[in-house]
Length: 286
Image (cartoon, rainbow, N blue to C red):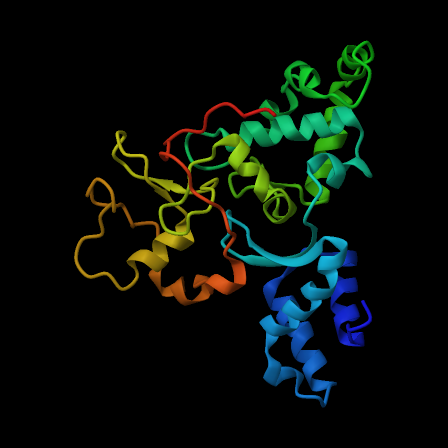
């Protein structure tokens, strides 16, 4: 990484040590670096600065990535391993039963048919690991049942606490369990394995999204996408598929500018293949 300047290293270290960080904090760091740099850093622009970092990190299969927290609409930046799956990302910190527990939690959250992307705390603790144990192939078959059966309620509680602390999970505004910003940043390529329906506006997985009131319609949209779609629209605001009037009573269109997204900044390249479904189906295994 010989082409990186000291300022690049400062930003990378901050993201590794304290990340993921809110975009305002990352932008503030960039502005500070601009003030301390006389080589035209500000003129080159923030996104070019991140792009230069990623050119060098790419050789190590890492990148500085931006992602949106679907629960509050805010954008965060973090350093992400582009190659590893959740086993490798979590394996240095969690045991196999803990990883299986997290995967089962993620599956339950993504299969929330209400589009709220959350489960009750008691539901999380009552998740059984037998199905996950059958899918694990890293340990001896004779050891699997014992390793997972001995995963106690106390261990589940401690693991849940750690997953919340490390932002793989979050506590939603309803006091329930949802996905954390690290999951949105680092595990988003796995969402397609859970067949999560896509947002009709941004084509991202609609984990926390509003569903069309027409039960026969499959359309869902994130709150922040709804604001962007309808903010300048005159007259009635209707579903783009079935034409039913969309209930926008809970949306604050005065905040639209704050959530407006630049595609080059946070868009995730996810292909949309096949028909959108209103409800997530059971996880696909490979």
